[in-house]
Length: 459
Image 1 (cartoon, one colour):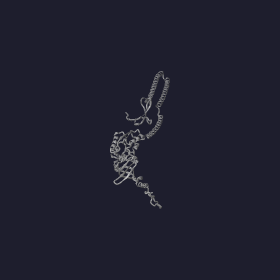
Image 2: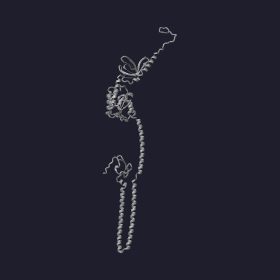
Image 3: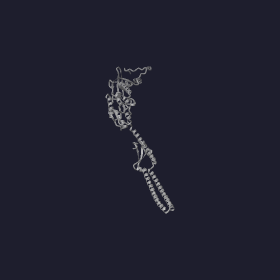
Image 4: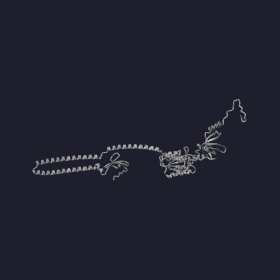
C-alpha cells in the first residue's frame, strides 16, 4: 500500500536499474577510500568546539578562515598532553583521515597534538645543538667517566614528580647502601632554567656527591624545554661532578643529553646505570674470597716447602764447634805423645853419654862430667818442663782462640749472622738494597726482616 492507501503496482518485467548502495555500504566504502588515500597527515589550525566527556576522549574541530574539520582524540593518545588545550589555541595535529560511518562525518583520528609554535622551538633546538657541537661540548673526549661504585649520588629533579620516585625505587633495589641527596628544582616552566642551574651549583658547593642524575619524567617538547636552554647545557658541561642526563622517555632527546657525561633514556635507567647491582657484587666477592683462600693455601704450601729446603741446607753452628773441639783433642793427644817420646829419647841419650863418660874419663873428669851431666840433666828437665809449659800455654791459647772464633761465642756476645734471601752470609751492606729480605741468627733464635735503609758509611 502506498501513502494514499492504494496498493503498489508491480511490473511483470525484470528490473534493469543498477543496484543501489545502502547508506552503510556507501559510508564504509568512503571510509576505506579515505583511509587508504591518506595514511597519515599533519594539519594546523585553530581549536574550537572542544569537549571532554567522562570517557576521557576528546572531541573538537580544527578550523582556519574558510573551513573546519571534526577531530577525535581518544584517551590513550591524549594522556600525555599537558597543558590541556583551550578554545582558540593554534595547534598542530598528526593523525589519520577517516569517516565516522554512523553519522557520515568526515573526521581525523588524532594521534599527536602540539602547539603550532613547535616548529620555532625545533629550529631553536637545532640551532643551539649546532652551536654547542661546534664548540666541542659534545666531544666524547671531554666527558668524565662515570664511577662504577659511587659513594654518594645527587639527584636534581622535582621532589614531587614520578622521576624521583622511580630513581629511589631502583637505587633501593640495586644498592641501598649508597646515600642519595635530592637537590629540588622546578623542571617545567620559565623559572625552571635558573632553578636547574642553581641546583647544579649547589651540588658542586655541597661537595658530597660524586655522581649527579639530572632529569624529569616525560612530557611535550615545551614541557622539556628547560633542558634545551643554553645556560642549563653550559652548567652541565662545566660541572665538576660526573653527570647522567635522564630527561623524559626513551624517544625524548634534549640538549642536556648531548652535554652530559652519560645519557639515560629514562630516570629509572639512569639509576640502573649509576648504581652497581649488590647481588652481582656479592657473587663477585664470594668468588674473590674463594680464589683468595686457594691462593693463600698454595702460597703457604710453597713457603713450607721452601723453608724445608732452607732448613736442610743450613748447617748447625754447634756441629762446627763439635768438629773443632774434636780436632783440638786430637792435637792435644799428639802433642803429649810427642813430648813423651822426646823425653824418653833424651834420657836414653843422657844415659849413653854417662856410660861413655864413666868408661873414658878419670875420676875428676868423671866427677866433673857427672856434675856437668847433672847440670845438663837439670837443664834438660827444666827445658822439658819449659817446653811442656809452653806447649800447654800454646794449647790453651789455641783453645781460647778457637773459642773466640766459635760462631756461638760470637753470637753470645750480641752479634748476629745475617743471611740474604739466597741464604748467603752478608758481609757488606752494599750487598743489600732497600726492600731486601734478610734472616738474622742470634745466640738464641732468629728473625726475618726487610731492609728499609742501606748505609754504606763504614764509620
